[in-house]
Length: 482
Image 1 (spheres, rainbow, N blue to C red):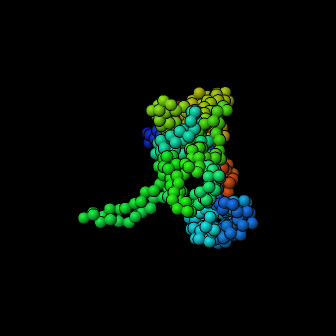
Image 2 (spheres, rainbow, N blue to C red):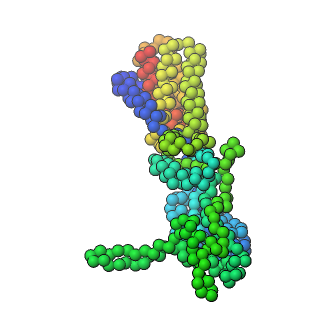
């Protein structure tokens, strides 16, 4: 009773308070990050290392077991799975749900780095990476043209750096193209005539194609760095490379081999509409706004394409279009639900003033929820919007109970609003808390279920709490006025 009386008596304060809720609610809605799904952090990591030419048994003994011994002592380790296959060993490290993944990943990298010296010399350094469900590219672009090697160079040297400088962009992956390499095809008869072998020619080419520091050279008051630059810079340099003969003298490489520029063997091929292309995949940073990152990437790409008329680019996949469509449909359904709820209230209550009171209360409740979502760092995604859509029909329950209780004949407006609210305040609060008790444990649970439904449940809880607050404060004032 005192709650309703206080807010009705200080009506100016109440109106200004909810005007602030409306203003900050609209601001929160406009600034909430947009995403397709909630951010989910899987408590697991992958460790893998390659050992070219080794069989599964050698991989297990020389690579997998040292890594297993290093990882087995990690704090918070739940399960450890190891797979040894030809040329590669892979470990899947599963942590407990209560483990801090950032600290666990740091410890994992430290453990793995300590065991590098125990691996074979030809084995690669172990790579540690976390399992990120949100790592799907936000934009994929296909570059078309007749020369894939030139497109590959443009994509890596011009387009990728331009996109990676954008806020929120983590990396840009380039796939589908190929790089040119110098191919040396020796002539067996000429090698035999000069008493040379393929191994000796390869060793001499590798030894000559080097840049070696030569120390320092004092030149008066200056100290100059000396560097011996023997790297090949063109195809002609390779052709004219001098090969030492066992019997003395030298011969040019072009005299014993055919030297040409050929594309490297490709591991991936990208096609759009049956035509080979270069595929650019833009990955966003964790926690950044997917829609803003995608739109800024597309805008920057269009600027780069406009500067080069020879480039043809097609946006193959853009997450922002699907997210915007999903969000727009969900928001439209929310406001349609508010409108239909108002129509139903008018039909059953047969009171324009009471219907208008509840119609004003419903948008205030939704905007109040957007404000709470902003404070809790929740994004606008399919789960959070689904929670709002589900809760639209529930937000008027408390208000209807309060409104109907003081619509009794014979009472003054003041007594009806204050006494009617006071009589049902405990019941309405208990009813709301009962519903909250169903959803809140799911939001607080761990594992994949908690990560998936956390924002969904928090949104419903925020919606129910805001409906309770509005039913006990704003609705009595609106009914007193209307």
